[in-house]
Length: 76
Image (cartoon, rainbow, N blue to C red):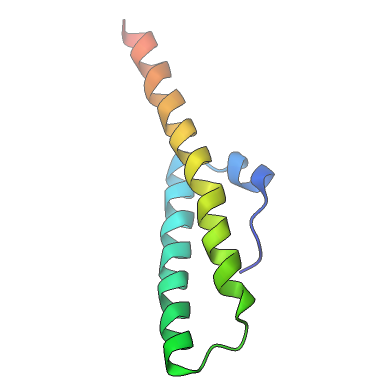
């Protein structure tokens, strides 16, 4: 999986972002096991996955917050 760009992340829906974050967490989990067993070939991918997660979480939280806040204003 290639590095995720901020523009690509912002273009996603909140559900797509959650799916992307979940798949990155699974990938990171698998990479940790590969490293422990000596099967990891691309060691820099662990760093990329960690940073992709860190890049995605704040945008996801902000988007969910604006959706909830926007829906709250509509019902009031």
